[in-house]
Length: 366
Image 1 (cartoon, one colour):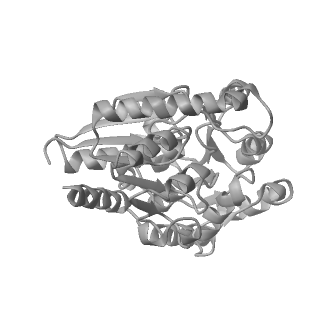
Image 2 (cartoon, helix red, strand yellow):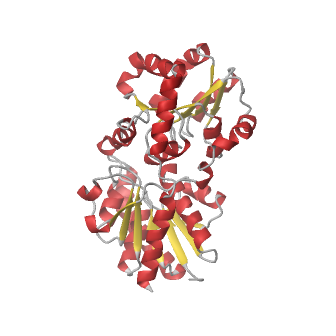
Image 3 (cartoon, rainbow, N blue to C red):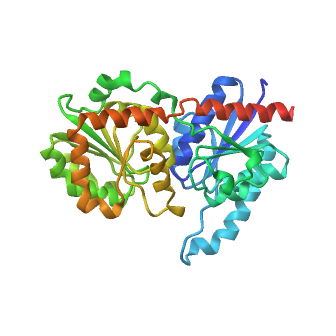
């Protein structure tokens, strides 16, 4: 298997990009001489993040449909045809042994053309409710790796493999990095740290909450490390002048920021949920209600129902946040129980399990 070629597509948000990179890294360890090529949407964040991880990437002129009539919607058929044609050219030139998709607009045309050429395809679905791209691709996919039960409602049952979500391997040992982490982020080691995670683009309602509660955090003696997202950076960066508050658009060293955190307030995207299970910090989920079938709430509930986290709906924040988070800050027994229970739900070997399935596809092809 010395000349294996893997083509991988996933992007739009960190929730699609980082699982794709995690899979690539694990494949590289297993097949050191393999070649890799990523395919993304040409104006999305994968065009920066994938090269930073050391992989080549090609961009497609593709975007999703908007809910209202826009120029982008009118251009969608042209973009789709362009992306299908370019995907066909990329595949013909690169000659992959397997095509892997982790979701996002670009994975649709790429895996569709791979399927049409008889190349084995594997889909990795992170969420409890699949996106439209993966649902369409599932009909011809060779294998579908999932992280939640009951996805046979959406996918062919005979293709499903329950693996969990791929996660960054540097998160497997954050406990030993705390001293390094506090120094890296210039955090006060004598204060507890609350980490705010709104996703790579940011979460408007979560940012509004943190802005409103900065005085509350200060009164509780905790420092705030606040990832506001690139869409909101211009507005919230001003709070970097406030003592005990650090605002960033994006976090490159997630291993260190998890190591530094004592508490986490987070959206409930699938990748974030999987990472938080691994690192085992007391967590309050505030799911986004603006996603298909409210799947972030379902993601969070799968942890909350096992005693692994707390959950507040956006509609409850104004009247319940200080009570719920204040109780978490003061109750060391609750902190311990949440940490223990969420870690019991972790799947640290998920990436290896996905690579096992990819290896089976290669062997079957040979």
